[in-house]
Length: 94
Image (cartoon, rainbow, N blue to C red; front, side, top):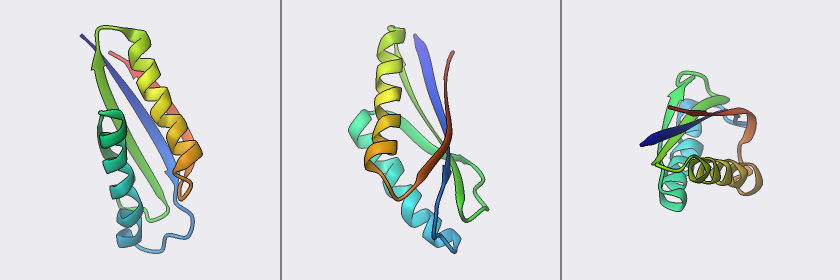
């Protein structure tokens, strides 16, 4: 079994509090879980208002399937979830 993880650094323009940050990140993580059947969580910069680091993971025996799911989720964030800006992202297999 292969584990694929995608870490994403986000910029959250216009956010002025941790509550405002949570208002953007929580729905994003829930939609990733529902749409792409991945495990998703906020993994870093939890005390910084206008930036976030999230990660989502999936499992498969097929490396190409892992890349397909993770890249599809990444492109969805970039193209459809426009309340955040993607600063950087990386996929890692284990």
